Length: 427
Image (cartoon, rainbow, N blue to C red; front, side):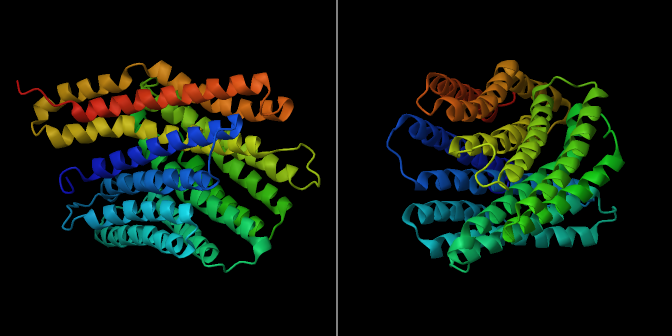
């Protein structure tokens, strides 16, 4: 398993963590809105289950797949990735148990283990770069900055876990930690990958290398400024950083949109997931600017509560990150499984077509469920502000959006199960 199916092992395990986190998140959401019993620790457990066990592991598996071809170096594993696999999943369990029992040292050591996993991968990549005759592409610069942001986020988490911040600074340090990981690590990794993956999935060329360079300049600068704004507790600085981030996201989004418009393959499920995810990224950046601007006033000019913040954060977590993951897996899993399971070049095409057909089933229902469900979370936040959590429109929006999100997840998870169970014909 570790040797033969390494990328699928990380990717599928990550999908399992993501699925569990989505189900837990739905329960926490419904419990908060309807008065069901719940524990305050479940929310932070839900977040770290998704981001460490799910997203970070997904990125690790994707980097194992993407980096050697980008560097054009022959790379065969001479060591097992079992250690990293155990560390990633063991540290996820450690974080969840640590948050559940308020065990700060366990949280700190588990976070350090995640950093160690990516440090090992980083050292392998440096060795590959030295052997490569290929000029280092823009993607690798994105990945390098993303890993630096991850290490920065882990350092902040360690300081928080071991009480290095004054009590009135802890919340701002948590915001800096969260945005370093989400905006710095996850978003830069996804954007760097998409500049190659999206043209590959659509069968076209990237519209503009210049826009890619502007994106590369704007996003890291915006992340650094945003984190600095949190650490110095300056909302106006955060607004300026948000404008820089939105500028980078608009350049990126326009590049992806123009690439899609010029492509022949526009309406496959992976392409549409990736395109929708790009739109949610732009909306998330715009929403962040509004929240930073609104926080300058005391009291805020537009009162916002937990419901609004949940809707905003899940534009990024579900609309952008989860849909990107679904789009990437919908493209990659059929290809990886075909390469691993069918040795004959001549017989690969029929099997790949079979797996692709499985992915494309009920695609419009899946897309509609995920996007309408994400929009419904935003609508729930707005309805809660106008009618209260117990108001009729709020309750209707709650159950409708929760049902849609669950439907989209079930459709996708069912396809993954069928992919893994489908075997090539022996004829």
